Picture (tube, rainbow, N blue to C red):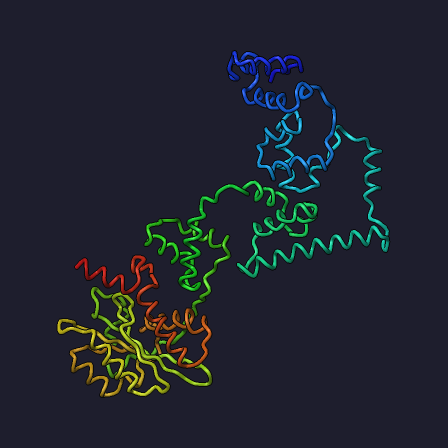
Length: 453
């Protein structure tokens, strides 16, 4: 940029104020940007010709704070503020603003230019020697350090109570909030994060988050399913809602938000046994069905709550994994299974050709059970003895239910447990999506298939 004398600047301003020429024309004629000319005009209108006198001064910290506070309270622009306080370049004010926002008051201290001699460096080092132990200066420094630690950990604890895990970004935010009260250098050291991390975070402050809406949606899905969904299932639910997102991005955002699937699956172990004698293993691990009510599986599982035992007997359709019905009781009597059959048979039509598979539990070997199946024209199938893999879909449901429900919730009583179990089965059938069902819940998948038929 062309350097102009004070007289040339004043002449350009007067030329503009006379109204004979526009600011852009005048600025081009003297080789400066029009914004520079308008800055001179503002300074001239407020201060007069004194605004263009050369000054060789370093501004004190208090003056810089007054300028920044005035700009913040009055809402003036950087250019207007520079003109009001007769600061030759508005860029000076901009630098003060950025420095104060990132590093606090320490950044407003004037720094001497040029290289310092070796002697001066040595003198500085001797000056920075820690004060003697027990001295007033040492006690004051210790008090200040403890005050900083207390303020920092208080804010960190507040964040952790809201979202659990504290990220580096959270620590940078705490440092940013305390930057006016304590030195940033010491805060960053206390937080245990690199200074580059802090300044990278500060650079993004004030900028709109491009993923804000997506984060809100992910948080909503996570809360809706009470933490049972991991990033893959959340990705599928987002797709169901018309928002296709790469699973890696969902995983990254969940990590930023401190969201983690709370369910941990348990593996089942078994041994191979002989083929059952009551009924053959007709299912033979063919766990897929082309239509509803073609293949059902059933089993009984046990719960221990409040010093009591409860037994659950559900029926699952292999077409979509839907729980057709279930019964629950305090004793594993045959009525538990017979009542389950009666309720399940209500779902069948005369056209249905059903295969009913179970393990070799004594309930399923009873004549009453076998007769009930034959009477409805249902083919019976049984797993090999002691081999839960032959009925792994039912075992898998039990594992999911216990992980997402039994070990996941707290219950006030047995009745409360039964009520929550009913809610969970309703949720499992109608809302819990599965990847193998094309991102739909069991009921949604069945409804979709029936409509397409």
